[in-house]
Image (cartoon, rainbow, N blue to C red):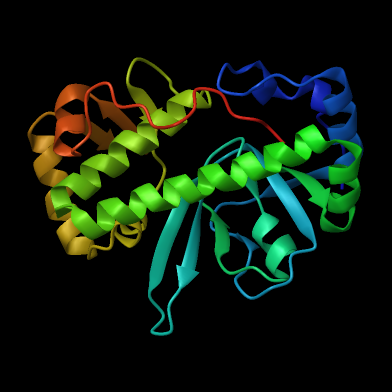
Length: 248
């Protein structure tokens, strides 16, 4: 396992979305880091029921976090973006309760689970950042659950497109005004929003035909953000996510 990117040179640190490190926090994090890992698309990084020996921060690439039901169906819990910290659940609960799979090529910063307690003792400020990250994950899951449980199919899909585009923009993935990568499959969207693939396809087509957005070749272009947010049941100026978040 190599160290190609030093924490001081992390490309994510320059993004406004992430809070700055102090020199001490940077040093503690660098000591905590064990190396880096590259994963090909459609590979399982963390598996439900497994004991996770390592923790990861996504340096680049995108993926999905999901839970497998007894009938073999899959519920997507969240979508994974650069800057996300994953595997903490396995450290607290001894084994993973969900799986994480890569959608694209992914690069991870790797941290040894056995060093977590030492990391927390060495920097209480960074341990609070772990708590913050867990709280934000809980918020995202709660918002998604509310959407799936109380909204129409059209509002669910519109909400997913809004939130996915916002998250991509915040971590510097936008390639132009309102244009962001969306490499996920329609099946991933269906599994996240509690819909069949056929229902998802028809609902998505209606939203696109109204001119709210275009989604082709893995790129989402939002052409009418106001209209898409209205379809999602979101206020035009709605902002529930903190503008800056810690980076582990």
